[in-house]
Every structure is written in C-alpha cells, then in structure tokens.
Image (cartoon, rainbow, N blue to C red; front, side, top):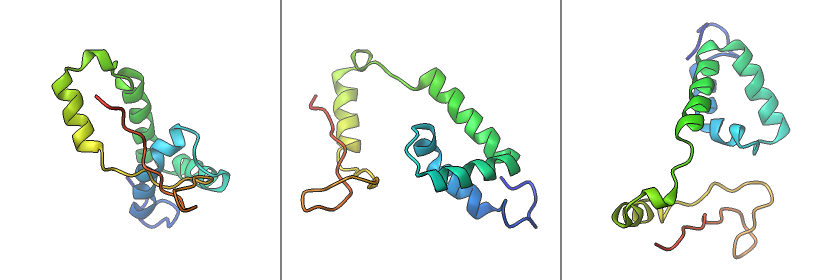
Length: 109
C-alpha cells in the first residue's frame, strides 16, 4: 500500500501493521502512542487510508448480523470454528494465573 517505496515512514511493513491494528484502532483499543503513529502513517499512505475507509464502510454495512437470522447449524459451525481462538492480550487483561490472553467468551448455542 506504499505510495513511495523510498520513504521509510510509508513501507510495506508499516502497511502490514496497519492491517493488523485496524480493528483495535476502530474499537478505540490502541494505546495513545500506537494510535498516534498509525494516524501519522494514514496521513502519508493513501492506500492504507483507503483500506481504513473500506473497513469502516464494511462495518457500517455488515458489522452486525443478528443472531436470530442465523440457523442453528450455522451458529454451531461458527462456535466450532472460532471456539478455540484466543484474544490477543490487551492492557489490563488478567488471565487465570495473572497473565494476559483471556479467551473471548463464546456463547453456548
């Protein structure tokens, strides 16, 4: 997504970081220093700025699927597919032994 391959502030590594952080950014879950760096990158990189706009639009259009619109089979398949995914630790998370990385709760179907 780099507009200028010679500019170290706008390179493919930083663009990949934007892709990895965009959900936390949109949820307001980034630490201030990370958010500030990401926003500086977005001002320099038209490709990443466009990616962020596309993600916002996607969330606006499809960000919520009411549970009652999914069949019981689809609900079971989603729980099976995502039931073992662990959330990345966030500041303040405490696991069973005082460490981060709590599993996100998956509702029973």
